Length: 403
Image (tube, rainbow, N blue to C red; front, top):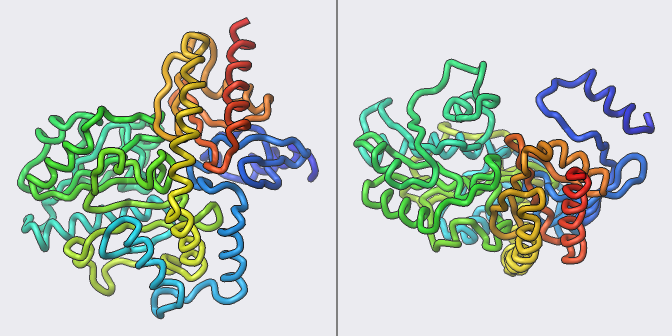
């Protein structure tokens, strides 16, 4: 196989159709740019849904992975290994929490947070057995396990996978009053994304996270922030919650924690929360493995400089200013924070997928969501010149479609 069509035909014939990829076959990548099997270059404006915050092939991350690959890749948590203590302490310090529980994928981390919240509710808050409930948001995206899709409001994510796990109450995102009305004596947690990524990079009203934090404290319930996409520098702060100075009880982390090299996820919390987990009650063969920890340690070190957060903040301002100039010229609305944007395309002009395919022809890779919205989230290492070029390509595509 040498051509794009060859790879796509075999992939479509021999794999389940759980994705609908754009027709490009990537062969190599460096920084913010990728190259396909036919030698064409594209600016990556998706970053693996924020898994590649630090760019493709980040030298520090790759060096850490290569060094660890040559020594030790897996022990299981049946034994200690020499990368784990640094990982647990480093991630705990980055989040300001006492303890860390590592897993692999984002969905596993969310499931872990749910289990911890329920167990905390029974052992610490005193909720009666099997009566705990967790408040979640409309339009959420926390993963694709059967438990998680059971409280999704996306028909594609939810439909056909029941029966669903009970114990979740769905309320309107951005409304503290909706949460307040849903709270009862058996509520153990509020689970939310500080910015809803899959829903189209939806930023809640100013003060929302602060009010949720205050409500959770007053009602003795845990605030769980799913920062899998929004965290680790993407929004111009280490965490999206930092924009309001809010510290949740549990951080849920993933994607960029693995540096675009290996899947790494974790939750962090203080001992009065995570201390409810004891040996045999939760685990993962690959969670916290030596290779994952070595890569995550490099990521934590990169974030410790503050360089990436500052860069995302400054480049985000440039990107959003240029995007706002497209409003009224094929764009209806632009949302987001830092180097992350949801762009609503005029549906009378084209769908989000049609715009994404046209952008691909202009050398930019982006992805649609919910019909007429596209998401832009280039690696934080992108140059300002390349970033502005990408937005200009979007302008050119919209002008072509309007003819």
